[in-house]
Length: 343
Figure 1 (cartoon, rainbow, N blue to C red):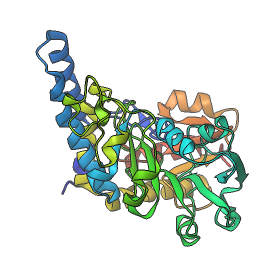
Figure 2 (tube, rainbow, N blue to C red):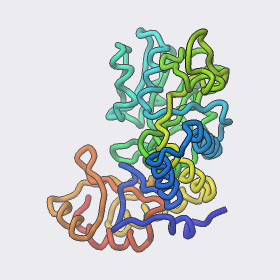
Figure 3 (cartoon, one colour):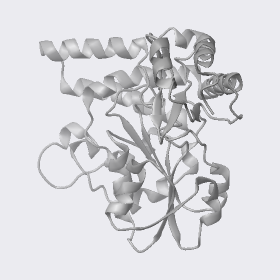
């Protein structure tokens, strides 16, 4: 196992970095692996098949993080591709339930295909499930403000769930085997580059989906699936693979392996502790999330720039994220600068 303190030495933020909810910083091992891969690309000394190895490592590490076998995991580049495949598998006259203000990569595919989509407050999702509800599509953690969905209540309804874990996987314990489908972008809390995404599906639903993005990398042996018919796809979730953005996966593997070595439980406790300390220091109400969202006055942008604090504005609110890259000193500095300016 790797301790939080050991893991933190893998990162080199220039200031107080509180923006993992926008994009995570790469650990040193990821950066070094990517530089080596770029040198090999530039010199022409790499084989395309070599990229399968880091992708396989990333897929295996992700499976350990979310509690599913690699055979139930497909890889791609964007969450919306997998959400679109699920939307295309359902009749448009069924009831699709989503949270108000949900991230649109999860919901737009259903709207675009003409589904009957009901938007309800996040806190009311479980109560709004009806007998005719075919699917609930929801993020485990809301991108806009860090609110955490009541997943236990949702599971208790027995409804099929498409769970987006982009803002959760890597810090919030998630057992993907408890949900019909999960999707996740790797470039935030999993500290991987953009162009990495994961999709999990439960075994009994493998044959309910048409692999509408079928391609050579969805074959049982991709390098023998490049040319000609007949259609030949993997028997497991790899049939839903999307051809990978190679260099992104080179850097993803060490990042996911670092998270696995530290352990999600330890990261969860670390992140929540830092976020709680910040909330307390600036007078915000307690809430258990690694994301802190608050209204900020007009002085905050200049104060943050002067202090070297990096965060984001989402839905008109300042959004701060606390992860492995964050130290207690970072929390103290951010609180010192922002106290009295948030509510």
